[in-house]
Image (tube, rainbow, N blue to C red; front, side):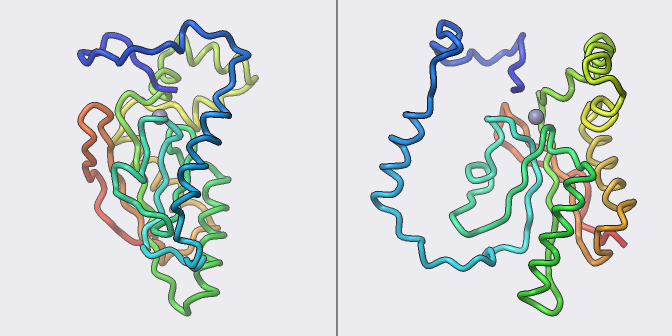
Length: 197
Ligand SMILES: [Zn+2]
């Protein structure tokens, strides 16, 4: 969702723009799944992930934690929202994950790793003209206020603050903030790991 014009990197040839909206890629997914399932041998994995990190990042197709963080099947919970933004629903779901972890261990250890990224589509929502259109479309400032990104360090800090303000979030939860660069594939820590409370 975050294609950006004026890029210095030439995009690979694509037929996408020539296709009409009735074309479905679903069969492609099933063909790939057939290959995946043919050699799948991870059916023994438990519900509890191998890692204590819970990743929250954007739905952008270029931002794939399994690739850039080398996650294997069973490694980590991954939550994806538009922009990787924390909303009241995200807070609720993190609280639910904490509850699940509490059923497995008396003292759950969990670090929420928030990852925002360069060229995010939500930076477009920060453009005043686009923001005005979005606000008109949805009838309130909610979408722009919740999702628009002007500065990545700022949006990360805002999301950590949103968690801190949420009564649903356990004070023991550790949180850190990071930026993923879609041009270099590199992850950079912006907010050091700290407890919410
Ligand atoms: Zn994005």
